[in-house]
Image (cartoon, rainbow, N blue to C red; front, side, top):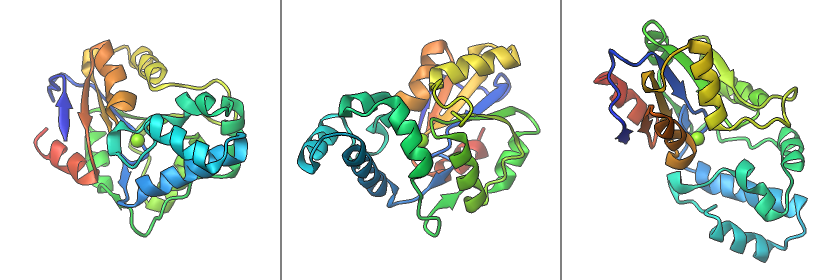
Length: 215
Ligand SMILES: [Mg+2]
């Protein structure tokens, strides 16, 4: 766990959670996700398996944890358009192994919501977030809103940067009153840090529990 900025429990007003691999953790997920990306690229581009694997390695799609990049931001480098990727992932949803996944207790979010405004900002399609939350048993009621691409707005891709700006506008708060909890520094934490906000980089849901124990 790494803390960015200096989040002060008295000053923070809004806490934003990344969803995938932050609000649940599964030890085998990174390997499974890379397999999924390989299948996706081979289905949507003209690349061979060997070319796909070489490019994945070059662009950081390895099982190397938080350094992994956003496929949405990089799909065009694989010869896959954002449109094709969005359509594909709605029909070929990346299912996680729910039996191995760990989540933080729902009471943690319920208690936080008494003091802070909670949001989820995800690059995953909204329907898929809702589906996974249900399967995992994550209670989404404590969250004011989930900012994620949806079938209605699918082709207006919403980046984390845009989500932070939208939340700041909605809440009328300052960026330094916002804190992001996520599993990838470049994708989740840095965009808010650059705006003046705070962040906690977590490796699994136990990190979330231990961070908020002393927050
Ligand atoms: Mg994530």
